[in-house]
Image 1 (cartoon, protein in one colour):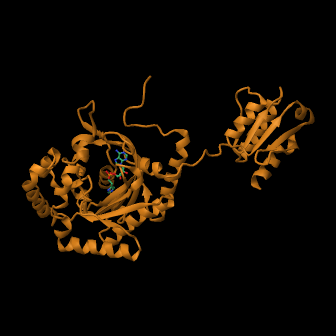
Image 2 (cartoon, rainbow, N blue to C red):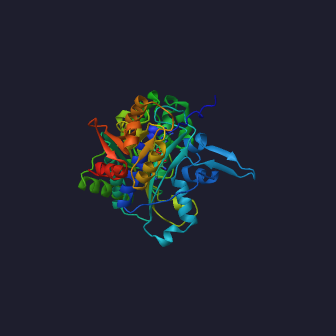
Length: 416
Ligand code: HAM
């Protein structure tokens, strides 16, 4: 038997209503903050991600699904949405027509990670990006939007984690200080961190290897090395968060797995997710648009892992699949049933009928499983009288209604 590829999963009919709900909520909430949808391609030139996310990140160095196209071009299935959106903003000059551009995207991403609960090779993100806004108040608005969305999805018990990773003025010096400190401790670090010390020391702060933790906790902290502008920016973000009553935990280790971040970074984590506890993450990326060949334009956003959100939401019992179930039982009842079905559907009522010749008992069981509120039966008796027997599934009461009145009767019942 052919099985789904490792790390991919089907979203089955029983789950899809939860997915539709979180998508619909996203569209509603994001629109309230002025965001419009953008849809970019699922594959892009490999170089976009290498330049955008950073060649020394785990994503680019070992997790991308890259392939050679027939013309020799190297293409990659997008591992995240930000780089593609930035490309589109530049290529289409979106910022010229909209100087305060706010967009969101929904769709699949691909990373060749080791699959486990909450971590897949094809997963889905809700992604939000705001361009051309430099003030700390947009950082706060984006964070507040993320929390408002989670609340609208009725998710509670999450924690917001906040940090500033500095900018191009102050971070290079901090990275050198960090590298120097790491070199003195190299012998106590795992092989990956020894390598990261040279290639990308910030990534050491992400390391989860238990033996490395004591060293990492003692390393120089970015918050003590921010330049005046970054310090002021962060102080204002924190002041506004306090003003809005948004609580958070500061973590100097929140550097995130992508290299484009500047200043504010944040994540929302849940204790209920196990090892993959990050529900959403994001931050400011002020140099990225320019790095990818565009104008000097600020950017900030976040992405939420939809599989993780669905895992956290309470399971909803089976949804109602129809209001009315028709059971033409007698020979010759089918034509009347087909006419009633059409009339009701045209009036916006959800109607289902058995397309398998089952007995009455089996049909009633099916109607119950489908969540039907009314079952309309047409047996030999009813057919002779020109009437439908209509059963109210909740009250288990039954009444006879003339054929000509049946549609109107059911519509009235459903309205009431
Ligand atoms: P990220 O932290 O790599 O950031 O991913 C964001 C979210 O996607 C994570 O918090 C997690 O919920 C989900 N996620 C990531 N990898 C997987 C996986 N393998 N399986 C399931 N879920 C996963 C970004 O992607 C940035 N582009 C976010 C951003 C937007 N920053 C600014 N704008």
